[in-house]
Length: 380
Image (cartoon, rainbow, N blue to C red):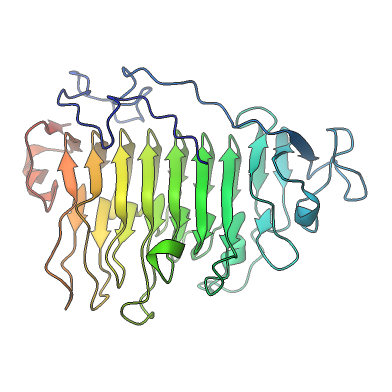
């Protein structure tokens, strides 16, 4: 079962009425602390496991046993089926140039449930993906580093209780994501990573929470916290959720039961965060709080989008966006698109945001939603 490590008011969603934001105007650089740092919370640590396997992409050997740093495997490819349950997969510190993805879930290469994938020391292992991929614009999900895709037609094909902790990840993520969770994935914890998707064209995302054919098999029970996501110039978003436009009505459900807190997303792209509606409605029961999103986002820092998906139900009000620090040099901070031919427009629950805008003349661009009690607007 996932370990939430939530230390706020004790309620979920949080019902604190006092604004946590500092009284001084922020600098343009990323803040050194988060809006919620005054709250008491546990130290950020990985989940320990009974077993351990080592990987050193630079000096390791796939002929080794992987039991110690000195006998580390070179890669996880071809070794996933040899990883025992309840295991820490430890990447040796250093900068490692890869020749492809780190892990792609596929037949014969399926990690057991109950694993922690981490760096030897927090962010000490830098994993750099290659740049030799097909022509510009090609859909190439293998350009990500961690690809967790299950067989959505088989309910028994489920990945659960997986943690990705303390890695420094750089890759193209060409029309994909550095970390992709698709279909029947549950109990994931993505914590304290540095993530830098770098491809300048098409949609390039940091973390992607995809869909499921049914509510029961959609990506769910996910905790994303304390990550630094640096979106290099291009399209895409730091954290993204969308199902695709081609699926028939009534067959697709969005991610649900998700907590996203204390992440820093910076850079230039289309969105800081993007939450796409699905045929069965938008992401549900999502608590998104105490994040810092600063950069130049062409569509908005946080976007709720139907993306012309006729029949979509819009944003579910169980999506709670609170106490975030939002800044955008290009346009909207919060933007919600209309639904085309779907249910009546729903609205997310918004409260106690900090809006940072270039000047008061940009006030109309703050949000498509009403500015509420407890919100703060800062002009640089």
